[in-house]
Image 1 (tube, helix red, strand yellow):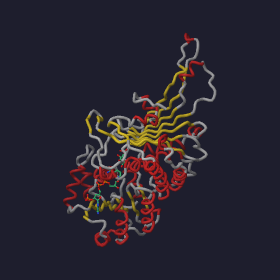
Image 2 (cartoon, rainbow, N blue to C red; image 1 turned 90 degrees about the vertical axis):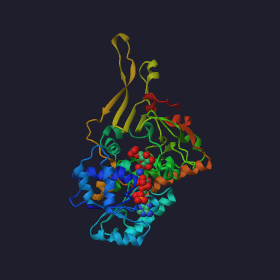
Image 3 (cartoon, rainbow, N blue to C red; image 1 turned 45 degrees about the vertical axis):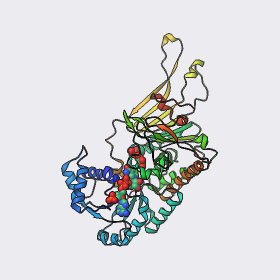
Image 4 (cartoon, rainbow, N blue to C red; image 1 turned 135 degrees about the horizontal axis):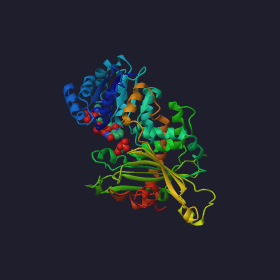
Amino acid sequence: MHDTLLLFGATGDLAQRYLFPSLLHLLRDRLLPDTFRVVAVGRSEHDDAGFKQWLRERLEDGDDRDAAVVDDLLARVHYLSLDLNDTEAMRTALSQYADRPCVSYLSTPPDLFEPACRGLKAAGLLGGQSRLVLEKPIGRDLASARAINATLSAALDESRIFRIDHYLGKAPVQNLLALRFGNTLMEAVWQHRWIASVDILVAETAGVDGREGYYANYGALRDMVQNHMLQLLALIAMEPPSELCADCIRDEKTKVLRALRPMTAADVDTDSVRGRYTGGVVDGEAVNGFTHDSDVETFVALRAYIDNWRWAGVPFRLVTGKRMPSRTTEVVVSFKPVSHWVFERPDRKRARPNRLRMRLQPDETIELGLMGSLAAPEWGATELQPMSLDLSMSSTPARRIAYERLLVDALKGDQTLFVRDDEVEAAWRWIDSVSAAWREASTPAQDYPAGSWGPAAASGFLPVTLAANGHRKKTS
Ligand SMILES: NC(=O)C1=CN([C@@H]2O[C@H](COP(=O)(O)OP(=O)(O)OC[C@H]3O[C@@H](n4cnc5c(N)ncnc54)[C@H](OP(=O)(O)O)[C@@H]3O)[C@@H](O)[C@H]2O)C=CC1
Ligand SMILES: O=C1O[C@H](COP(=O)(O)O)[C@@H](O)[C@H](O)[C@H]1O
């Protein structure tokens, strides 16, 4: 396991909210080497003591903080103020760390990836066994992703490049693989013959607040669908890998992403909805709308098709939005109805095809919708009723922040939960088809009030499980 982490963007939002708290937990749980050290790099002109004071105030804010562990972490941190565009300054300041293999983590905007690579290379930090971790987004479209990948591959081998999609660090997301490939029952019915549709919902109550500049250039399609949602789709739809090696899994995910049917302007009206939140009420609090000058969407609903043998004709409905009524990430697999109905005719109206609901956030639960009989002898006949089988996951161990797992894996060199160059490009290829179709069809972002499930036109895309929770009913 490498023991030197160079964290670029150390003064940023991600670093203070997730990366340093993750390191704190890993140190507390003794999951880092004794010699572990962090070179924290930002543009802000703190001196080392000033940065540590700034960081201490943020770390001590958390409710699970142990003062001794905070002290331990801060003793391992050294701060450097550097402009990543200044290759010579990077070489001068950083070459002292080239004494042993290290992990450089670029938690910075993507336009800094190229200059940062130049500076790291000049400092000798990309050679040997050193690794590079990159935050999303990897570009803004296929062309820019390719340019970033070309820069990276000119600097170091793909086996040492770790592209983050933090959803892959979430234990419930990894459990999708366990559920699919650890159970005979699932895999036997996991295909178009038995499955009618798949819903993937990632709803957030949070708004864009504080990230308007970034978001206005990306929108929900590029911010959420290109990475997290397509990763969920790939895990649900991929073929079984021959073994759990990083490339075995990434090969299969990439095949799925490549098989996504491109969207055309003719599909836009039936297969997509764009939305943008206006003012409203979320969690009992009044919130403002997203009023940025750009035309970006904060909500997307898409119907996607995977053109391969397993998934022919099965719609995958992808819905994500900000300022929704609840924070919910779930995958709902709806099965086809039974082929021949043998029960009383009136029962047929009540018949509900089986449904597997895998809730990933905020809590992890699995629910299987079945038909069963609640017959009472005096009724004289069997009456079928929908029943649901809840598999509580409450006995699973406490979950770690996704970044804890990803940081450990990057330090160890395990790429399984990181995204490969061809995978990123396949995802962008499909996203580009959607944005080109929207452009050609001049698809507007329709208003929805904050605290609702998106524009009215999207109701046919919402999983039926929302109606079961008392939310708006699905209309088609
Ligand atoms: N925040 C989040 O929740 C998430 C963020 N991400 C991704 O993580 C990355 C970082 O995001 P976030 O922390 O929010 O961004 P911020 O804007 O909060 O931070 C950006 C960081 O980059 C540094 N930086 C900017 N320009 C330079 C430069 N020329 N030279 C050296 N350092 C520079 C900043 O330094 P300084 O502040 O000192 O100027 C700061 O530390 C982005 O790619 C983002 O998309 C991904 C998922 C979630
Ligand atoms: O990458 C991002 O993810 C978050 C949602 O992550 P979660 O772990 O809280 O589900 C999203 O808010 C943000 O816009 C996006 O950049």
